[in-house]
Image (cartoon, rainbow, N blue to C red):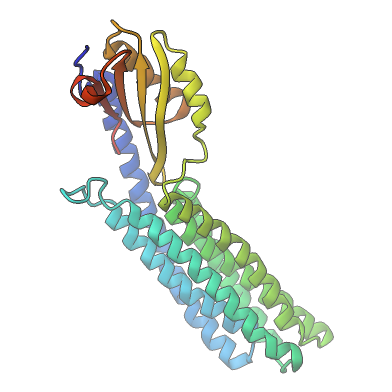
Length: 326
């Protein structure tokens, strides 16, 4: 039986350095974009809170309250990026990467709660819509919209919104604030032009429904990762077919794929091979295949020959662990 264990190719080591360097650059970009967005959001939150109180606008007050949650979510996301950069320890072999997922889940839940609170506050205003000073309300909402769009632009341009769920949760908070500002502007217009004060609670509810949708998507994805669900881009059936097509492989079984954090997908499996086939022959093909065809850079593959006593699998099986780094 072949006894090749913990084999790392020279090419894989080179790739590990490159991947780690790229991820470090992304993390710094995420930190910078979150810091800038936090400063912008905090300043506008104060302005909208004062403006909402002076104009008696629920749309504006709800938007400022939402921005308060944004300040908290942006700050928490910034802390999560810092935690995720901490090295692995003896009792946390994957490090603190999951802190980003927990933060995304928390942000999603707060978005859900805020949307519910706005709908609850709108209930009384449907029955007896109060008078609202619409002109100052629209002016302040325009300022809020500009700030939200600036924050969203910074997060999109300098951060990894598409690939990092933690940053995406912060981005959704900012984007939902922008929707709130648009809602406040529309409500102000209808109240100023037609005297429709009921537009204030109606538009608040519409904006809340949009927030609910984004929050639910974020919560569902976060829970999926925490429950060790398979990454969306990983198709285990396709991987099975690809690995089984390697010459000498009898079958592939006991496969698992999960996500540690955004961009950090992990895969493991057992590969049964014909007698006389060295594990290094299989691994030299399987590892590049997983990386190039499926984007999996962290894989653990256990190779065992046919007719091996399963009771001695652990001491006779060839085990290879490959990681391109993180």
